[in-house]
Length: 183
View (cartoon, one colour):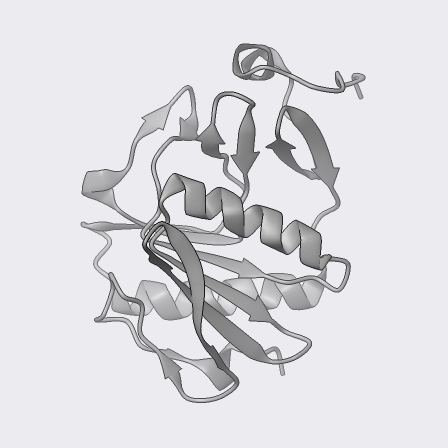
């Protein structure tokens, strides 16, 4: 594998080779390589994606649950890789092979190694992009924290461990919380 520079600009980053078998995010110009997701994490993402696909119109909604780059800003370069993102196709902006527009919903599934500082940093990035709704899913605690963008800030409106979720911009979708958890 090629040695990656410590920090990069957007233009430099576009010329770098893709990293195989790992997830790459760039935060404030710093490339961060993360290992592939653990099984419980992957199962939760897949279950959520299946629930959404059964209920949403593929003609108007783009659901992404594979590794993709969501550009937060060019200077300093920050590009995140959400676990799951839902876009209205009419609002989706793709440039240079990456997405440059805010999803209507981002779902982040926590891993045991995630720190509170990493979580907060990622939420501030989504907030700065104008993501109107974020769900933070904890397979360990079996909870879903729902955050909504209010007056430019993502604020927790509920933390649920049972019942159903209905996304703000996709009210036709109903997510049964117990169905998220791996058996």
